[in-house]
Image 1 (cartoon, one colour):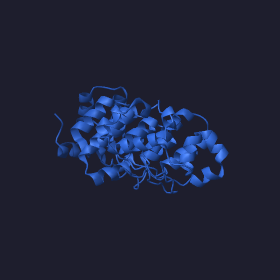
Image 2 (tube, one colour; image 1 turned 30 degrees about the vertical axis):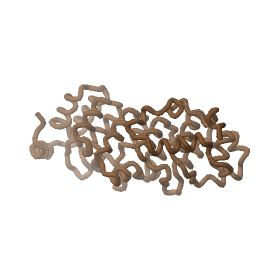
Image 3 (cartoon, rainbow, N blue to C red; image 1 turned 180 degrees about the horizontal axis):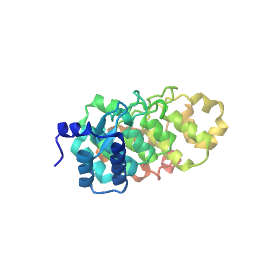
Image 4 (tube, rainbow, N blue to C red; image 1 turned 135 degrees about the vertical axis):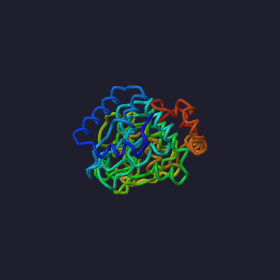
Length: 292
């Protein structure tokens, strides 16, 4: 059985920094090697300590263990931590796991950065235990200014062109209008990615389709750039998407109907969306869009 918190706190006082480094690396290897959950939990609660900057030896918290599970895609361990500890697993990790004091809870951004779609869904499902204000604060929280440029997880999903992560975040209530320090919202970030390179253009178009579906009011900073360079943007995103984003014409009746659907469908039914709304099958220029 796990030791009492007070017991292993007193044991931690006698741990040297070198011992902590060894046990920390052992835990890292154990998660990387996808060892069974019970082995990892025995290590976390009874054997493993890490060294804090202020000279304290500390046991890993569920939140810190979840970071390891995310990096190594240990889905069973992530599921256990989120089911067993719920909100506690999503709390702020200790200072040694953060870039600076201004860093915020990193689980969402780590999930997006490593494209851990399955664990991201588990995390988002766990936010059902939050109040609505807590959930919005968590989903739309800005990341570290040094590492993430003060972006939210939604910005990062657009920067890295992660359509699967993007639809999960949007479907669970992440705000598509939230801005970073430069005033850019996720749509601005995605458009920047589209104009910088033709790589992954199909996935970029999928992301653009998702954003349009969850943005009934197409507000973004780059609209004037689209209007001033219409030839380029028509070639990059297609005539219909250009007209919608440039404000020349409203989205088709089909797209407006789908926007209404995305506002009403329960998040637990997100996986049941029609195939044309799921990556990588979405198209901005489907035959449906021609019906007005």
